[in-house]
Length: 218
View (tube, rainbow, N blue to C red):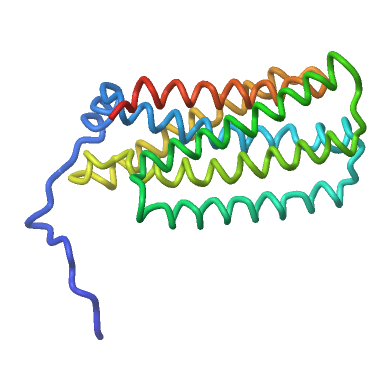
C-alpha cells in the first residue's frame, strides 16, 4: 500500500500551549485589530442576512423571489472584490488593499445612511429608489468586505507561524464570537423602521476605520 510521507515528524514537533497563545492574543494589539476588522465586516454581512428580509420585503414591498435574486448581484460584487484584490497584490501591500476595502465600505454605508435618513426624516422616497440604493450599497459593501477580510486574514497571524494550527483555531473562535455580538446588536436595534440598519452599518464601518488607524498603524 502506498502512503504519503509524514512532513512533520513527531521527533521535531513542539507542544504548543493553547492558553499561552490565547494570552499572547489578548496582549497583541495587531491580532485584536485584525479580529475586529474581520468581525466588523462579517457583522455587516450577517446583520444584512438577519435584517434584510424585513427591510426589503416587509419595509419596501420587494417580493420574496426578487429578494432572493438580489443575492446574486451581491455574490457577483464579492467575486469582483476578490479579483480586484488579487490584481492589486502586484502593486500594493495587503494592508493597503485592506485599507481601500474599508474605504469602499465606508463610502457605501455613508450613501446608504444618507438616503435612509432623508427617507425617514425629510420626505418619503419611492420604494423602488430605496430598494435600488439598498442593493447597490450592499454590493459596494460586499466588494469592500472581500478586499478587507481576505487581506486581514492573511496578515493577522503572521507572527504565529510557529503555532499556526492552534493560533488559527483561537483566532477563528475569537472573531466568530465578535460576529455574534455584532449581529446581536443589529437585532437589539430593530425598531420596525428603515433607519437602524443603515446607521448601524455606517457605525461599524467608522469603527473599523478607527481600529485600522489605532491598532494597525504601520
